[in-house]
Length: 363
Image (tube, rainbow, N blue to C red):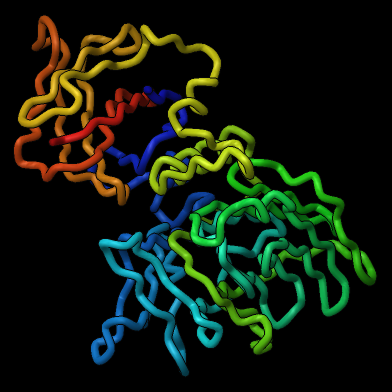
């Protein structure tokens, strides 16, 4: 199966200037000046306590906006290290926080959380102080919280169908309006009615803190019990195509294929639904499985000049990168993989905004 889109619907892409890495799914960039303002990844940027290496001292933001969240006191969350899926585990007593900043000053935001289904308490709160002007993901609901007792909330009923130990994606999208909230679970839009309480008031532009594992009011009953693998935050409401690009990046990276709750039956099949492309546009590779040398045939979507090839592992890490010129080859393009360990990989071919990927296995 193959994957293609002009919006880079595959794992992490790069600007080829070598200066910066693009955002997840190619949405935003890591300059700190784009719509991407928060990117916490379990596979990089976790700083542990020197005296207690299983405890997380800081989770460094990869967006370039320097929204590093840290433990400012008390108990620190736990580092979930490989060979398990890397992430941060909270057991009901810890939180990580970044100070209020202009990153989430607007009245709009889109937040993706990759987590274990088994999950109670606060995943993330964006608020200047306490309950006021808050974007919130608490338990299995998202909240548009103007002040204490005055909020709109929405649930996603399909989450109940996901096994507790399974990884899933929840996504909240907020606008300024009092009930302007949109909730997705594994890419599936929630149609649950919105719960409105108190006086319905729109949110105001304000510098919001970023708090994981608790709200800024530190209520014991709202501390998080659960594991977070990745957090992605934008300071705008994403378009459908942008949202799908980020979802696809996460679905591919974490192998999320739950088709009972969600629209991510597989990242390849989903992206092939995009109009305007046929199988002849894609790449084909052989042999698969492979041991030493992989061969690539390029479809008509590629023109006869340079193509960037990357091999990405299951953690989303680029472990092999090569630039080739199609003019130099009369037939299949060889790629040596004999220095890579056995396992599952993704080959990504990029030419401008034209992105194609193909899974393969090294024996």
